[in-house]
Length: 286
Image 1 (cartoon, rainbow, N blue to C red):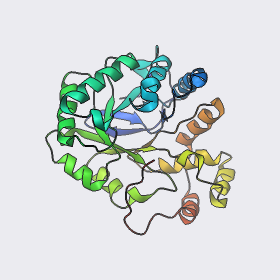
Image 2 (cartoon, rainbow, N blue to C red):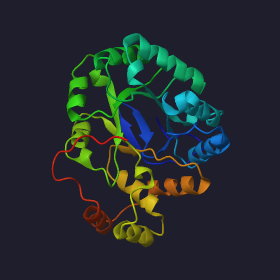
Image 3 (cartoon, rainbow, N blue to C red):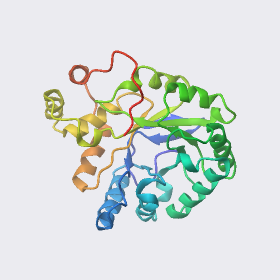
Image 4 (cartoon, one colour):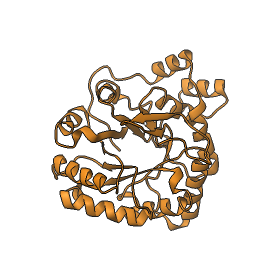
């Protein structure tokens, strides 16, 4: 995907032969759970897209489908500007169930295709069955690309070995300053195999705290701590962050992260305050 007309151009992550997606997108977890917030959630998504965060991530699980209907309203008249991502629940991820789930998501999203479709996490259905369904959906034009979510290195290796495994382009996982376990093996594996990482909860749902180092870096750049945390997450190639925000102020501040370049001094201070684990740890999930 190239930069969409009408939106500021963010730097992109390239994958496959010619595809690309912006390094900063919009998350929708917990959207659609309170009808009183629907208008604010739609407006936040519209603003984010206008600011160049043209990747929108959702899932059939979020709000039991209502998040997808919110995305549909936000994307009205903007669909061709957006890289749209959704996810199938593991219990629906059989050969036939995946296809039906995708078709339900397409109907709720009021679109004829997804740019990326993910298996939300490993489940009881064999991943090779899900991959079979993904390839059929791709051949039908209902999805353009597919990937996985919450898969650790050994699970990625196993999935990649099945028919259709060479078409996996993404792994969406929890990654932020406080959750750096993927740096030991999963992130290097993904880079080596041309798989990009989508970092969900790059702000740890606001729980990264007020460590002096984070506040100092933010003050030096005259931005918020959240902006610094997001910029850190997308500091290297091959990583996309999908923070969620529902207030205009937070959306605007998140968008600033795409242009924030952290210095070696900044990175050293953040490494000292938020050290990477010195041993292998289980894949973190929320």
